Image 1: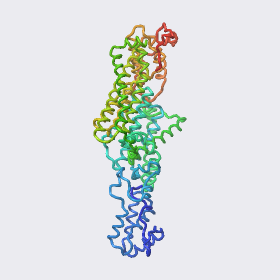
Image 2: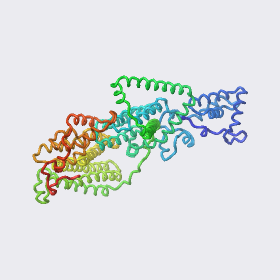
Image 3: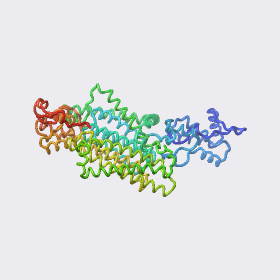
Length: 621
């Protein structure tokens, strides 16, 4: 593997007599080299230099001899001509080690130098140099840790596995000459912070969002995208490096193994001896002391024989993922090269009139909302017959869709906006800025409606999720307003950062714990108010600290299922979240009471009297 042009791309030698170029035959090249060496010319030196250069880059010896023969000056040629010929065949300075610089020469040179041809060949820089040893060891460590730690669940083990994978990407980027930039550091820090969510929370749904977002930020870290297509495609662009990364790793291992068989043998023997010593003495010490045996059992993962195929799959997954990350760090696809053609500019009246009408409609709706939300509700209730909760539920989902459609309208309006000069820019900013401000008021109205609804019926996972999404849409609108004032260059990356920050905050606040806390407070604050035991008992271990404050028998009914899952789970330390460990400590001190028959006598609201079906206020939405 080298960034130099291959033998195929070298300019052909002219044929004697006619001057027509023809490629040299191998036998003729060998005779030329021998004749040049016998005549005392510099051909032998050139051949030796070619062999040395080929050995340094890991190229086969035959190719090096051929390259040296072709590069040798003809008998009797002047040294200046040979220097000019060598300069004509060399790669321009700066192409080696720069992942954004394409190799010079014919298209065949670039194709021969690339790992994979395909739809991204135009966007991909030349193949990176030979894979460094530090990258190989980091990739191997990632694969081994994946096989041992990821088979029992998610927790702090994700951070353990991510450390060597990040090291592999760092060493690969440094070998390719890439520098750490502020946005790259931002993506990397955000991705590692998101991986802390599984270590802290037991709930599966915020953990899933955090892991997916961490993968997206990791891909953006490696590719460094900044445009809308670059950020959107670059967040999943790591998949494009899976096959090239594996091929790169195989070629690098093969090239290094051919030149260092003795060192590999020494390393394998040393590792084997160390493993034997650890097993022998570790077994002796474990049998001599029960405490030491328990310590080893807690530190080392338990791998049953039936899980061997699953562990092998995790090993292969970690190996391929780390190689893909390292390859993307050394030769990232330039997703910013994908461009979207701007739409045809419209006239001022044709473009602005529909948006001004929409602004007026928003203003009329907001005026009514302000009257209702600031004290005019009695009039609306007299006309509609709806109470606060019904009125809030009736409009929240419509306002959420209105916010989403407004963002789509803004995107299309920017595509077809007039672009004639400063007056057009002022018109676009005024019309779309007013629409953004009015939509922010709609967002506030939707959140107020959700607050009324939660106060009446309690908080659920779905309600907190859509409220969080509505809040994030408001942040996006504020970013659009800022882009209209300061320029839109930062907008794609700022929206991606805001989404990742929202997912991180959503996981850190513990949605299940917040749902349980709100329902328990509502039960404590209102005498005679019920608590939905059927819903709360299906929450995760994150809800245990709040549910522990319920009186009996509501407490035992809400915690019975959670206790069975937490206390019977034999999960190792690296796959146990902090929320699960805290719940286990609470339930060991105060286990649930009774045999569960009291729970059947409770209504769904958690009271012994129950309630009639027509008064059932439960709503899954």
